[in-house]
Image 1 (cartoon, rainbow, N blue to C red):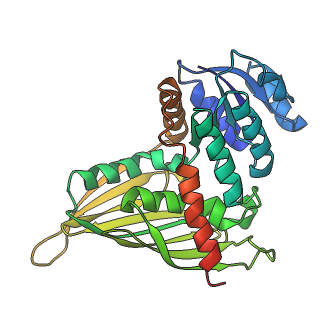
Image 2 (spheres, rainbow, N blue to C red):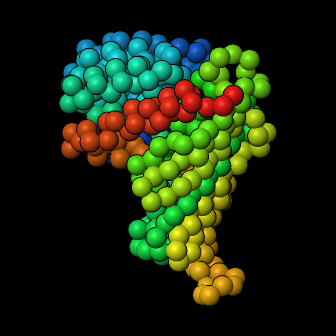
Length: 314
């Protein structure tokens, strides 16, 4: 599969490095407009570099666009790529309005093209281990969930979309991953650093699914990176602490002791952020099989985010 990478800043470079470990994917070119970043790319990689992505739209040898630019320029690029018959891997959020996400998703589905959204932390080994333990029945019947995913600084919000669509969209996806079909039942968004409508910087949401309740916290004003996820069931719990991009990730399995007492504990530790490579491999598999069954992932998450925006206390 031949791809180009559009937007080669922090995330784009992670994509480049990941793909170099995947022989099934060939990078045909890099697209970047920042002169300083172009210099970095020239010094560190041997791929062709251009400031013009549009020439690749008419190149029939290109199978896919990997778009790692920020949200607003990305929408136009994704639109043109899908109309040119290219599969797309892009970052979240897919727009900052539900109508934008709906349009792009409809376009991909109509053209029978893979649309893969970069909810990359779902591929973290510790989170995958937690899912495995739950599926194996190690915690019995799951009945509550909680997750906090917060970033260290409001300045990291380069997308200018606010905490809900920057951090919270990950939290929504993870809640779906662990709870199933969810609906928000109460939420609150805070606008302290961003004195602009819809530019929230902190939020809490309670969810409900058919058999579980859960809560999540997302923030750009925590001042220290932090991640913790817990799922509790009738026979025990699993806890995931930290993300591999920040250091050692630990998945802890607590086995309930009857009738009560300190639970038995088993820890699994993971180092090294392999999420980018795993995600690119998943994208390749989907393209190779023309698997569009996951095309609606961003749309499903955005619909929930829209409900949160519409009903939140502020």
